[in-house]
Image (tube, rainbow, N blue to C red; front, side, top):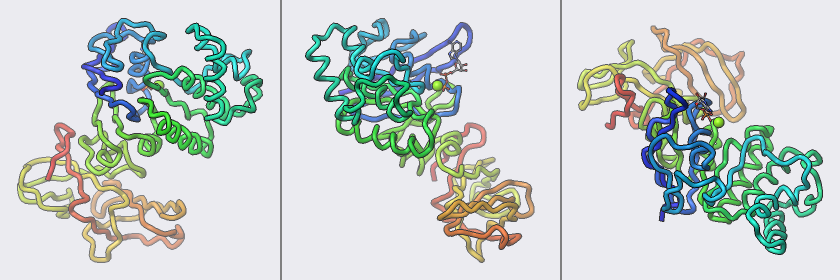
Length: 352
Ligand SMILES: Nc1ncnc2c1ncn2[C@@H]1O[C@H](COP(=O)(O)OP(=O)(O)O)[C@@H](O)[C@H]1O
Ligand SMILES: [Mg+2]
């Protein structure tokens, strides 16, 4: 059964088109992450599902019921925002209880739901405090608690971790994931952070300028990006995208280096090489002039250019290099299966 369905959803603000027809079927209990750069329309999409923006064209269905014309309160959803949006003058208890009071639930039921939610989020000792008496992580937990007590059909999260420092963000990420697994509530989570997306998602939607570029499991998207955009956006350091050409037999870089054989395409191509797939190899054909060395702990990132070319390239090698021991030149090889190819006209993947 579908927890949430989007059918050809469009959004315009006046004459400006922001969402260009998104289709999505979210299964009951699934955790979907929408990931894309700032301004690509993630919040707008979420706000249309929540009923905070009207849909310009297309349908939104929750639990198989069309909700386009329903008020936010009647959609059986709960939303968690980046800025928490807690009521500053209310205690934690009242912040969590507020929506239930408005919905007219009996007092005893409200108290029980808040008690259970607070226990689940380890907020039970803090119910009398005001938001200003809480840490950032605790405030974020109250915002989550307020969503949980509603027992909605769908959770909507809009970058809920972006205001937290790096360490807390990772901790809260794990908490949200385990909470969602325990509750089994269909969830849609928006972020610009591709690592957050990879770690949280059952499936992710890579979004770019109001279009869903690819929908798939994190592994699918990483191993088989369908477009140049998805290829560059997912993975860190980002995939190298290098000009190449196919003559109907093999793919060559501009400096003549043959990358792999390819018979089903003739013409200009982008070759995508992940930095970690470039393996140091004295006999390797990809020769890099090293310009900068970045040790990051368990591995080292090397920045440079391809020999006899001004094409920039990045590789990531295992182990810690001392930047002072930098060699001017290093050669690499890459397994043919690790080379991604994209049509230069359409930006679409060429399967081979
Ligand atoms: N109320 C609005 N009126 C006009 N333009 C808007 C409005 N809300 C958002 N936009 C525009 O829609 C685009 C997508 O915004 P948004 O959904 O907030 O992106 P994201 O959440 O991915 O950063 C942006 O170009 C933004 O300026
Ligand atoms: Mg946003």
